[in-house]
Image (tube, rainbow, N blue to C red):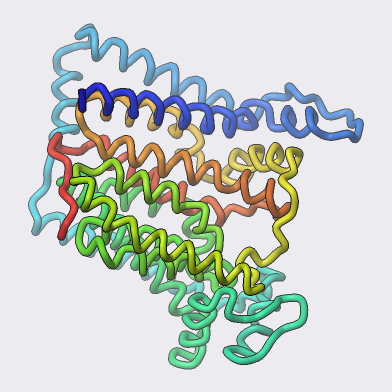
Length: 407
């Protein structure tokens, strides 16, 4: 009965994720289709004009589909099958993995550190807002920005960076380095393979979007770091996990949308019902506190939450293909990853369902934000998707034994 329940959950998770990913990828094939369908303004734009990534997507995905069918039917040459099995089962020693991760990080730090000397105001208009906030923080208010405690964690870290290092970009850079470390350790924890952790870090390092925002004070990665840390703590110190989640929310309110993802993550672990409830209670308390703050007038969203607007959510679904156009690896392999994680879950790797939910929620968060607030969607809002994509690839290399939540 338990196995049937798990299988039904896997199918439901896969169906919902496939739907969300599929809608997001429509604009990859036809960039103007969704917008022209919802816009009341007549234009001469061809809604069926083919996108630049269409051909690479189709070629790659048809190749993977054909390879997958031949692999499962034992129709591929034995040497290729052995190579595929070798990669899936390959593991690396602790000393070798430590050496490689150090080399990768030294190379990354050496390359990215030069951006610390660039004045951010020449790159991003929003940096003027950050400068105004830093002048008044922690007690003042800035016209048009609201109470500065709205993003208290982010503001505190930026102010600390400015005071301690005389450079507001240093701690955002440290946060990005920490995100790489955490991606490695989290992937190793859920996959029980060091090689999987290295693969996840390499995929994150190759992301153009990650490099675009890794040293920015205007759009720091604090919220992504704290949210991933909250998931990692579910295994190490589960009763402290909600604290990291709370820090994520007060780094960027978009993290509020990730609460259902966390609750599913906890639900999907092999735990007694009582233990699940005890782990979830702090999350519920955190959300109650957030609700109280909203009732007290603290504007967590940075904008008034208006009526849900269908046009804006539709626009939100067009942004992934456009904003991540420099991250071709993600655009081309997001659908195959979704299918591969489902196949992995069918083989008993329950964590694959949790990663699918994280991918789905990350892809859905931008359209929901656009639908409820009317905010424009920029690439940095897809950083959670990029991180969970990288972790998802590492999950494909998992051992069959699922990690156990700590006590």
